[in-house]
Length: 327
Length: 223
Image (cartoon, rainbow over all chains, first blue to last red; front, side, top):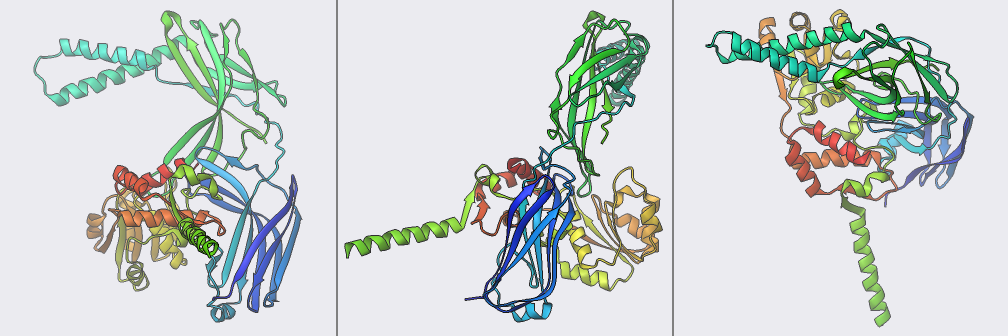
């Protein structure tokens, strides 16, 4: 029967800015310990490389002996700042752990090589690590959108482009010489749709003009999105304004990069027949804490204003643009 | 006597049940809530050693690295076959050699200005052909990942090329990879759990050797 070395973590209290608990280390043999570290750690995990950040060093103890049969109690108590709430999304999760890392003196470790290796505790012969996930109560401040103007970009009007492209292709097919090979036809087709796309976008911009958005009258619970149109809403019969929040994860593991998007919040539509410039649309903000403010290299919450227009003849146009979030 | 016989029968049944419990196979929906984190998330550098199932002879590769003789080493294969994971792990064994992970739209200056004679480069295709040729000519050893073999480029640079091809994935290797992920994410007090072999066989049939595809599928099953 091999001798046992056990490591356990108990978190007794965790409040908005305080954490308290104990780490227990028990050995069935005398043991020289080089270092014992207890840390509060913040992890980002998901469909990306991931991150690990030590938020607070809770306890550190060096060069001590653990006697046979003795249970060493390492208490920890700290006032610490939790930078973010825990979050479980579609493509990413963020959470806190209390971690204990025990380094046995290496010569001792060799002597005690017969110690029972407890799965997921022994990282190396001389290093033990244990993690305990902790739920952090978190009081998030209200969201503050910044009064920054940004352009709304139009999506390609697919239907008009397709109809225009098909018409151009048909006309050119009839009017050009009868004999041609497959590649000429393919080229003719691609050219027709490209010209149609450029023409449609050009006509759209000339008719309905450009759109910008700026958040105004911001308070803890509401925001007004002011949408300006350079053509003063000429030709626009109806407009629907809304905003959405998208979890955006950049998965750049390996030799390819993929952007993953998941909508985590959608506002109600604000519908109007525009008479004045700007259109002023009032929206409720999400409950504080509902959407985390975590922004790092691979993970972002993107706030986007959306505008949907109905023109004469039932033509539809869609626009999108970013909204900036302050601290 | 009859009581003793009955109780020993119950004990043996409990023993068999415990044995089964000690290593049971499940489908994701049965065990997905029993881990500290999603076992199929991206792996941090510190956990690489625990999850890697080597596809190549690591010792042989290290011999090439510690005794370089003006040659290049490529890990070649399609996306999601484990090239970058192996490269990151091997770099941990020789951490003094600079490591560059290249991405689209990022400056390549740090790689080109790096004075070290030996380099690790993940995703070398983000360098221009001219830059790759320059590196192959100047450096005594570059260990890199690529989708397509850089044999011609090494020939042009007058360097020998050693290739490690990343393709193929056996059912056994898949089971081992998945098991290591589950073990890493589980608490030591939990019974040892595995994913159902039939379930993994179906995934293997669907995704072939696309390990990243399998792991991403499992990620969503466990999230």
